[in-house]
Every structure is written in C-alpha cells, then in structure tokens.
Length: 205
Image (tube, rainbow, N blue to C red; front, side):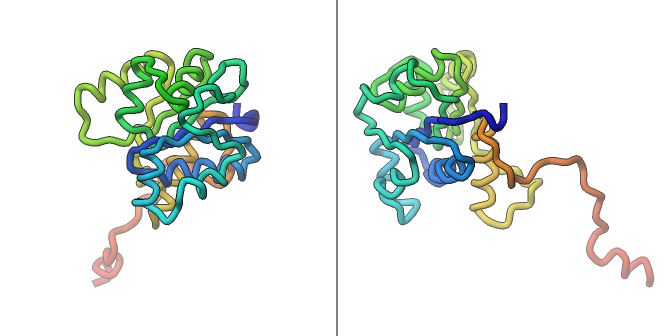
C-alpha cells in the first residue's frame, strides 16, 4: 500500500544502467524511506564508466551500505523486516543466480530472502537481445513471485532528457514496493489529437 513503506533493499549489479540504482536511492530518501544498499564489484566498475561516481559516492546515498561479500549482514535474514527489494539494474548473471537459488553473495542472498518471505522483488533486467536462457530465468523468477521489469521508456510522457526517462522507470519500480512518488507523470487517458503542423494555414488557402 502506497505510503506504508519504511525500509527497502536496493541492489545494484554490473549491467549497464547504474543511474537507475542511484536514482532509486535518491527518490527513496526523498520519500522518507530507509534504504539498505548492496553493490557488486562489477557494478562499482560500471559506475566509473557511466558516471563520475565512485562506489563510495553511491554508498553515501543509502542509509546503510553493505559489502557484497558480507553474507552475514542484516538483509541476509528474513527476520530483518523490509518492504521489499529493488535490483536496478539487474545483470543476466544476477538474474540467473536468483532464478536458480544460488545465494553466492549478499545481493543474491537478499533477493532469495525477499522471495522466500513473500515480499516484493522488482528486478530491472538490463539486457538485449534476449537469449532462451534469459527468458527461462525471467520465467522462473516470475513464477517465484518476483516482478521482472525491463527499464523500457514510457514515450507517452514525452521525456526531454535521459534523466526524465530514468526517473519515470525508477518511480514506477519503487511504487511497486509501496514507496510513494508524488511528482511522477501518470497516464490520464488519451490527450486531444493535435492538428498537423501547417494544416490550418493550408485550410485557409
């Protein structure tokens, strides 16, 4: 239920799109939600290629940052209450590990905990084109109760920047976890059809 969230886990894996995870931390903080972050080493490397941020900069955006090797962290147990987990972005390797129950690091363990406790798990799977292995992994995660949400842009919002595309996708993902995002464009039905440019001038001729 929107407005009821108090704590979420944010995982960032090594796929392209670290901006999704960064923005999720920022929006969750703005909504007053406590965040627990876990990043893979590949994600830290990707961040240096896609932004000016280092792993420590991203860690400062979270209330608590956990080392990916620390499988004894709080978020590794179902007794630690959260409203759910968002993995943004989710690499094919991470998706496959979740699909097959391979809790070989804190990120995949936290995802497994989220599923076994029947809490929402939202994964922004970032890969294309898709192989049969990807499709089967997405099917398996979905059957276990996870939500596979590829970060597909909503062009009906007519975004003017990459930031607007990221914001909309992350906002939708966080709302699936019960995090309220107040200032987010929403579909309100079809807009009135616009006349083609120059049509009025031609009609007067």
